[in-house]
Amino acid sequence: MSNKALHLTGVILPESEPRDFWVADGVVVEGPIAGAETISKRCWVLPGLVDAHCHIGLGVGGEIPKERILQQALTARNAGTLLVRDNGVPSDNWWIEDRPDLPRIIRSGRHIALTKRYLPGLADEVDPQDFVAEVELQCSRGQGWIKFVADWIDRSVGDLAPCWSADVVAAGIKRAHELGVRVTAHTFGEQAVAEIVDAGIDCVEHGVGLTDPVIEKMAANGVGLVPTLCNIENFPMYAAQGEEKFPTYAAHMRDLYERRLDTLGKAREAGVPIYCGTDAGTVVTYDQAPHEVVKLGAVGDADFALGAATWRARPWLNAPCLELGASADFVVYDNDPRADLRVVTHPSCIVLRGVIVAEGGTYC
Image 1 (cartoon, rainbow, N blue to C red):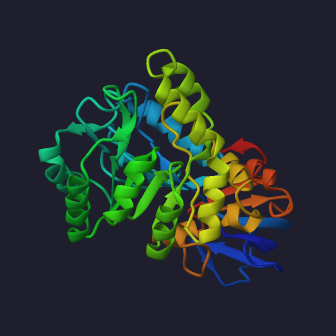
Image 2 (cartoon, rainbow, N blue to C red; image 1 turned 180 degrees about the horizontal axis):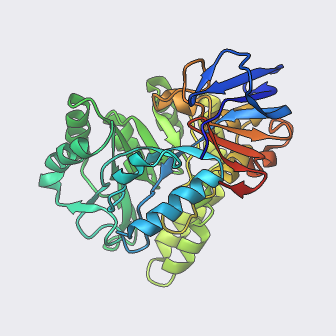
């Protein structure tokens, strides 16, 4: 990999007019720079895509070996995903920090689940009396975020139900905030998401059970939403799998699926900040962030969908975009993705830390 100076002429989104853009020593700089390699003279550029709900280091059964983690990270990078908010993994992925050719990761420790109320092997499972202590542990293992599972199917009632009492959730969120850590949570149903928003959660994952009062409170408090439409598309499959034993659950999941775009549309219109995330790690592959952008185009306009994965998502995660002095992490396209969001699925060049890592479909 060569860290040579780069130049291009194009539209640096969300700007509207083309200009010259320069990279040297891995960062965005003022030009001109003699001898810089010109990547393109007519292009459109996005800050490196953000996948704000991704599990690099997770397999169907939990922990996976290093070589599979590497493949996951490369798959994400080669789709243009250059910043990942890790939503909990059982494997050690910290070695990625030593690989400048791999995406940046903001870690959340290991996600927290109620004992025997989640998929085995994926999370740290604890009883309610140990929830706050587990929050403290995961705060020490992450990088400013933790995640817990707020609801899951309760076989005793045959439907989605909160995993924790409201007071337990509130105590855990309060403790994380005391430690300077933001909190997000998995939730599908209506009750759990209302309780975690009341408790002061910072972000909601999936959120298809949002009701109008909860949406209003999220908008007022600036609570983020990462809907993971790529995973929500699997709800009919999840419903079919549970149909025989849990028909109420199956009907609920289908209803949540059918209402998904209406629910998310209400959230967007109310001013809830919505971000791109795929839930890659089990049934979703790691190349889906561009496709999630396309799906978000059904919720809002092109600027909304693109911003959810780039210029709005990066500041939310305290990461730079493409200002002077920032790391040169960006994706180049031959056509304007604002005119057709499907363009984001076909980058012509990917630059990470100022180095071309993919060009014309060839990965370096």
